[in-house]
Image (cartoon, rainbow, N blue to C red; front, side):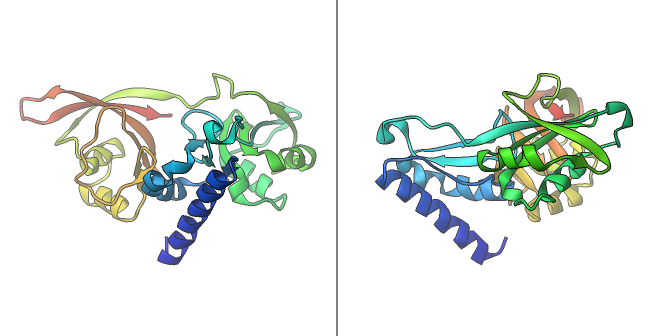
Length: 253
């Protein structure tokens, strides 16, 4: 991210916080990617006077909106303007093999901005897509095909349990609980490649971009490596005879 873009985003956060506070109302960003959210977290302390909350439609979403304002100041409560759409083939047996990229491309192909679209969860050729409330009806009325597959779109209240992100527990042996050592082991990378991922701004802990590889992981830390995946660091579990560490993780699958 260039310095110019960062300054623009920072000013936008400051403007929304000031307006929410001075006008006693709630204001929302569009969906932010992990870099945008990391920029917000860097400023969270100085914006806290207005009241802030982050949400993407469900627990664990990577793309989220930020809400500025508080019910104490505003005198009312306002939910995040997020809708959940289920997109499914009209005839499953004739469906193409549909991926995250296919669903995202078809929605953006309607002339919509990426910032209006949140997380997309895909299982067995159907998708659950979080979208900004302002485009929900438009997508429902106009999204009729994904690739060559005719689809239906319907609004739903929540992601079914079987579709929600799942984790698989693993026990690993690492040289230390440093960030670079753990992600190298989790994703079968060399230590140099792991350090490069961090220096390129591709690694996030609890939504915050990491720039140093010496960070020690703590129990419950959620680690995301762009292009590789995401896992929860679930703590240390003893040492080996050669003084290496057993660590537990929960890998998102």
